[in-house]
Image 1 (cartoon, rainbow, N blue to C red):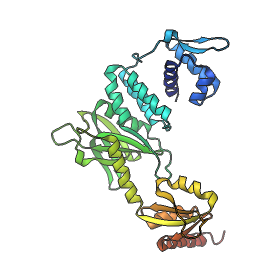
Image 2: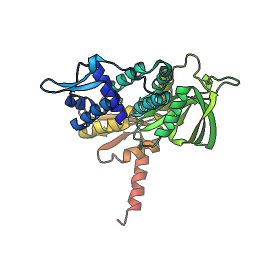
Image 3: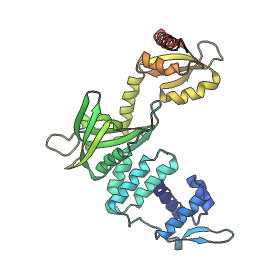
Image 4: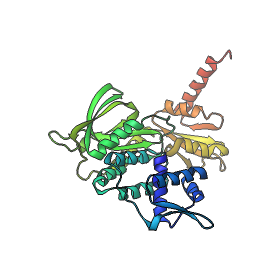
Amino acid sequence: MRADRLIQALLLLQGRPQITASELAAELEVSVPTARRDLEALAMSGVPIYPARGRGGGWRLIGGARTDLTGLTQGEVTSLLIGLTQSLGAEPERVAAVRKLVRAMPAPFREGAQRVAAATVRDVPWGEAERESTSSTVAALQAAIADELQVRATYDGSGGERVLELVPLVVGSRGARWYLLGAPVVPGGESADPDCVRTYRVDRIREVELLPQRGIAPDGFDGSGEWARMVERVEGMRGRVRAILRVKPWAVRAMLDRFGVQARMIDSVIEPDDPVVEVRAHRADALAEQLAAWASVVEVVEPAEVRSHLRQIGERLVEQYRDA
């Protein structure tokens, strides 16, 4: 995202006496020509920077000037923060850039920007998740958080499609999949009901509309803490069934990466040099389906229920492809 790069370039310029195009390219992980074009774009947009030619040269802010980004409108500020928080990278430099950007916001816009930054979580995935085109829905929810507004959403859940009116409190992702923590307002009020906070998958929201009614977080609401409690509940549901695996040594790292927090190395109870891994899932048949793809590098030692489901999967495959 170019807007992301330009902001990071500006912040780097403000933190150093000067920077070369090659140094900026290394920081932003782009080519040198791209970094040079970004610097030229900043200069053309009115940022007071200039290139110092020759040995030891580079790009500098004129007279050590700094900018507070006061030329941005409130909508542009919110849009910029939404773009930054939706970016997949969560490295420390990006987190620091978001914090610095919030501090640099014009004072009237800073409060909404802080709400967006504080109410957006990027987290590790639960297994593999497909890429989803949810950025416009996430952006609408973040805009509602910034302006403290309620939303009306059409949600296609397990019980069918229904219309929700609620206060969005946290939008967060596990890998590529986004989730919303939200709650209806207390009767006759404008604050979200802390006893009715629920989790919704953003890819199941078909439509979202910002309402004119104000919707604010409950007093003392801890967004990061609420997200952590939600993750713990889901992990508990997902980890009801455990299996012990003997894994080929070269495949252990790939398996641990694939299953994430649902897998761990354990002390060998079979042979001293055997890599042994424990994996978890919410049902034995679901765990067997996941492990079937690893059949060439994994042997399920226990429980018998998972082994039985794997045998049934194998029998179905043999029958289906008997004439192949």
